Image (tube, rainbow, N blue to C red; front, side, top):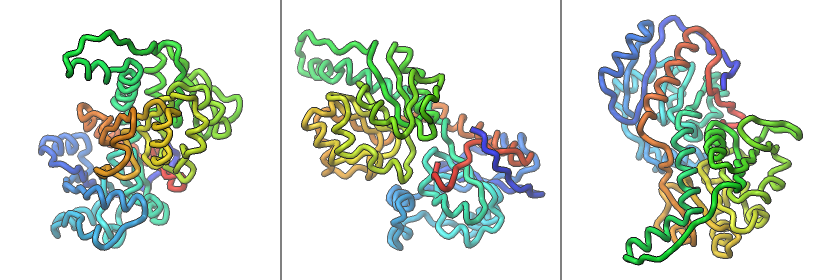
Length: 355
């Protein structure tokens, strides 16, 4: 998506790439060749998950801040002089010692840890990496659905136990899959699901009655969510975290789902009431749950999610490293071209909606 937000021009541009990992010198050289008018620097910066999560939830403490990686004076000076940052995390207090910053390109689609409300107050543009990981995440979703419906776990157990017993899974063709959140991930899931001759229903926050969408067979707005859900054999959650989506799938809504539904969450962990989900799995109301995101990450060892029946857990790893950095850098370079030309940037985050 291209926003109409325009970024003020600057005469000389300093761009700091804050990849968590070290960058090869050749990568910086490539950027210098493509943008000779920009001075590029690299500062590796990666905060602990506990601090990142606390920032996203507005629960930062001095103890958590003390765990942030220290910056050398030179690194701090480099960041302080940046007009452009590409980052996963931002050092605490950056707003007090960088007065030049005009634009931040987030490394991921989730940007809660960057405290987006502060961008609006400072007049700084924030863009996210929505769409960069949509293909591997969609592949992961389809893979998990096939794993559930084809009962792959049963076959794996039989192999492990050396048991030759005839067992068959379900037919995927003809099933109905509902997608809550038709962003880049939701659309990529929809396109792949259609290849299996399923009926695909979509729910989008901005949809109105009568709207259609080429990627889904039927489109529903917020008021039509429950009408959509009762028809679904599987529900895929790929919506962002907003005030409206927190606990969107609580006990009441889980009870309205089609009995035995497969619930997949690759959006945000806060969308589901996890205690209610465990109860729904135990009762059989939800036939299986696929969670790549949870409310608390890392997931505590004593979480009941680990032992809930028919639970398919993964540690927020549904994307793929292969090709990710290349796609991310291409997005950054395209946006940098736009920044230098004072053209609208892609993937601008609405600070009021936080996505």
